[in-house]
Length: 335
Image (cartoon, rainbow, N blue to C red; front, side):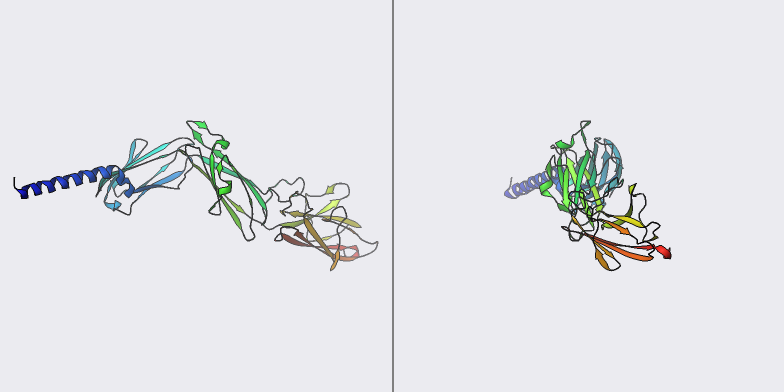
């Protein structure tokens, strides 16, 4: 055999080996040329989800793509880069397999297993003041504290995983909260800033094995504190069933007004952290000795006219928390 034939034969064998290696590479490591993603990234149970292929190394629009969900072929065709499906119940796994043919690297396969879970976030404005017997939810003001608790619903092998056996990753306003993340840390306590209008809280939870991940989100709007005035009746106490209107006529010779500073931050859930500034007809006055948030008025016999009462409340510690209100009381012959 001549030297030229030997060189030709050697080149032929080399090209064949390179082609064979390329095919093996496409079947194994070639998957890195294509990514498979979900939208949303962490879907919950019974949620419509889209699986999508993305590649910057090849034109998927020209590729033959076949989608298989839980062993059943769902979609097949040229350029079928995505398909939508509905996730199963909590703990029910969905297996996605996709085959991409007609590529420069041969056939590429991608697979993904999804086991949905869910997280409910429960929050409370832990130092927000509300009056006794208030049936509503205390709302968070700026510079207030909020406690958030994650209630996960995650199953493995058909069994519910206890919250304390999960790994949590917290995010606050799109920033990771590393100090409060970790194993068993399903509670987050935050203090609002000076200029925040809302708090966006997100958390993921997964078992140590990492085979299942659940996601939860809460958008918490911050509010301004407000003052509501009530009548404190001698026999009934504070009449919380109805707030005092801005203008009213006094039918008795005296009245006791009780001011409730809704949603001010107070560590002891009392009024001790607040400053009350009462003004009657332009002159400063003090509230009752036993309760600076209460004001007693007594009309002299035969007197008539009107009293313009204003009240300002400030937080001694959280200086952004303040509120004002006004009240006009008519009495005597002007009734």
